[in-house]
Image (tube, rainbow, N blue to C red; front, top):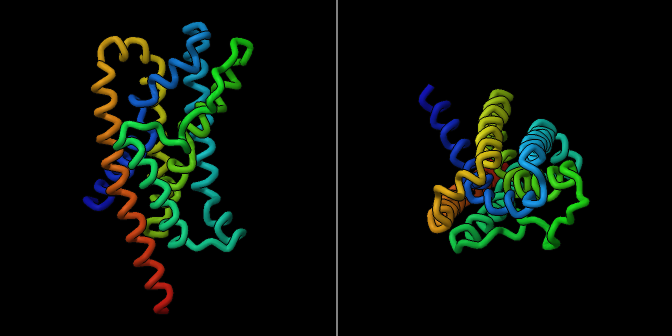
Length: 213
């Protein structure tokens, strides 16, 4: 029971750090500033729903994808850990990760809410390579289907928190200073780098165990 609770807390912290709902508020406002409050809410809702769908596909069918491309779980853990470490390093230095940032062009007014919700919000900002790697790594822990359920449950909570942060973004930016948002981002970066190191170590230990069989 304690191990399950600890796992859920670890998954929550990992997703919260890499999704960074508070840190993504300025990006959300920048992308949706030309839309009405109603459209902004719709964009927020669709972006988190689509992000959840993307991650669900990779978590549920991850093993099939691995077999299709001949990828072992230890190899993915090591590669995913390095990827998450680089994202965490960017956050530690108060930089937006190049893997989780929107395209450089400013969205044009004629772009529909659906366009903005899917890309760049749902992917790569919310469900980018780092988020997907983290989800698959967590789901692979223990090799049991219950882990998949737990990971998707926690990710649903994080998506809900992200939705709330987005629809309250204008209020939050009036209350929380930019310096505080940057501080939160750096703390999330520290958590991510530590988690990434653990992913790499787990991958190495599993690879050694597989070679010893």
